[in-house]
Image 1 (cartoon, helix red, strand yellow):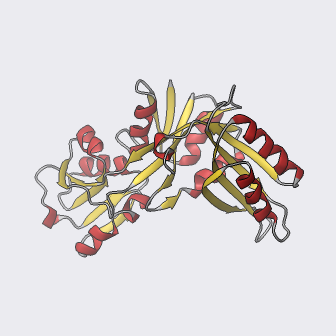
Image 2 (image 1 turned 120 degrees about the vertical axis):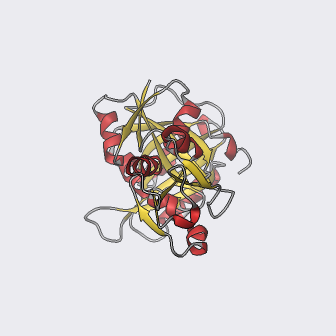
Length: 276
């Protein structure tokens, strides 16, 4: 199964992919838009994208791409994120002056940069790609923040381990396919929606009231602007639902309220949400 990811082998998206599909063939891409294009053209069977991190928050670009694409969420996976400072063998932490990584990864390691004010964080397109670049350049004053897996793949040395701000650092990933799902879970599941509620007072409150009435547990909500309509928003919701019939009734009720909605996925929630 070919699965496209944003980033290089050794990235956290790569790790999430192998967690879900151990024998997957990885298709690395530089940009998120390229990942979705691989899916649209059929060059990849599926894509794996990060959607939410417990420290840095939502990956908003991916919400926009999910909304605009003819795609559905097949399943989710939660990965523990452990960041490490990686450099060429023989380098010393005291020598490092620049550290490259994905902007979200850098944002998760602010404490490290406060502790080392002489080290400049430099945004790069990918964590593993940053390690690859550092190794190719061979500069002992340059480092990268990435996974232990990336260090192993590219032959990097670990100068500092677990440099993230908080040990409870997790990223939720989505396995996404094109078209529509062939079936939905009958029992407890997660419902992922994109809604555009009517622009009048109390509409969103009405929608959330119906979610509660359907015994749904709202576990994530994210707004994104509607292009060409200032101060209007799409609202993305992840809801833990008790069973399929409750979801069907909720979707019917939302339509009756005049709420435009797109079902992004109906799938079994990751085990980490069992106690949410």
